[in-house]
Figure 1 (cartoon, rainbow over the protein chains, first blue to last red):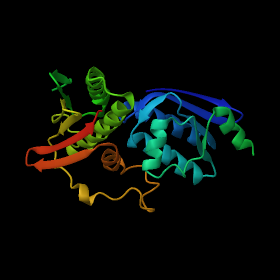
Figure 2: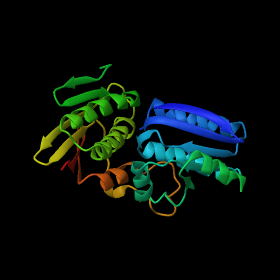
Figure 3: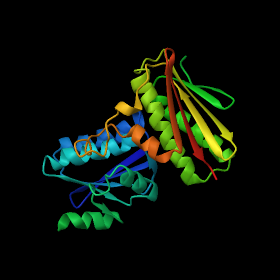
Length: 113
Length: 140
């Protein structure tokens, strides 16, 4: 897995690429997410368009980030969720938990409302 | 043992999560050789990653002197994958339901649930020498 990050209109956009399966690769996403949280960033989008698949480790990182931010007045939203990951979210009943958008632009706009 | 070893349709790794990608590359490569649909490959790869994660972390407790082996074979219209570790095993019946409201937002505890959802059969056998988990998935 590779990871890029950027800030757009005050929103942190994390863009993982590849597979999120655990081990050192998954730590990269977790650590970057918490690095920004520790900088008191509150608004996050994880763009999943380039993630081939993830397992429960990936879901755990998203949930951990979501709950940490929610408890601190922030939000983590998803963009471009692929069919494979959507299936996992449905199976685990996490699909109603995350706000999900079809593009990064729509997700960023949702923070303005 | 310090590096993954591949013999035929079996890969053996030391108990470290850094070798998850070796197992994934191995399994996905063989499945592509079987001309399996990419969506089914992903389901199998996700399941194998869950079980190897469990074997390395919970079974072998990250003891690098212990190993995890994964073998794969095609049996008629099914793929069968066997994951073997040297740990104490687990009772699938004792695992909490991750869909329960109290567990829904926990960041762990979904691995076996996902494997059961994605695979056609899941069989866990524990002996004194370790745990063997066998999963099958139709590939037609």
